[in-house]
Amino acid sequence: MEFHRLLLWIESQPSIVIALVTFGACYLCATIVFLIARVSVSKRIADELKATTPVMLTPLSVLTGLVIAFVASRTWTNFDHASAVVRDEVRNIEEVVTLADRLPQNVQTEIRHAIGRYLQFTREHEWSAMLASSAQMRTSIPGLTDAMATLLSFVPQNPGQQIAQQRTLVAIEQAIDARRHRILLSEASVLPMQWIVIVVLGMLMLVTVAIVHIDRPPAMAVNLFILSTALAVCLVLLLVNDRPFSAGGFEIGPESLLGQIVID
Image (cartoon, rainbow, N blue to C red):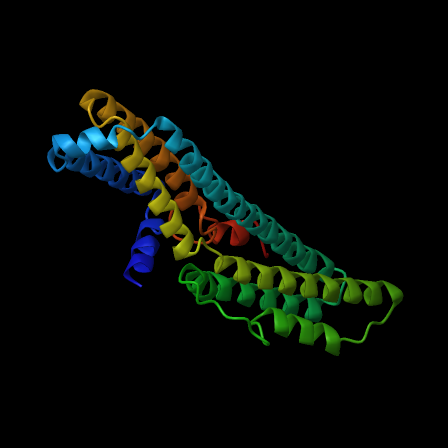
């Protein structure tokens, strides 16, 4: 639980803070491994450990690379899907507003007011709930449900109004579906166990590098620095893209939806 809270705190920070924390943690781990290797290992144990060959790094690096690649592909896919879902929601809401212009003035006014309530609800309540991964599916969505009720109670007077009514209802249904996918994606993240696996594999690689160069401190220090930097870069890429609708890293903010819709 504490590890999960720490992850949430890190991911809620700006990208530069995430990078500083991650690089600092990786360099700290490398420094601890170096100091332990130099201080705690006796001459006799060092001679025994020298039998370890650099080939040991190959399976560790392959395993680590596969795990990071698997997690990264899922993370970036979620981010791309989140961007696409928001674009779909914007397109459908704009279509609702545009099609409402083909309906009588009183119906048009009610629909525009309903869409305004939906956007206000999204800005003031739903997006903050998404940041906390606590947004809920609703059977009644403020604004959109009202707009649908207005359309269903409207009796078209000509074929043009009937077509506009049908297409507007379809656009609202698609907007509701896009909202549902947006909420589901707000809960998507890298599982704590996946982070633990990556961290453990990274630590094993650092320890293996220290063992391989146990009798060559300068080479050990340089290789630990290089490897810890590479691990930090990978972790930063995952952390800044992990939660598409989070408050840190590369997030999709409410302006992505609200800033593109203009209601006169």
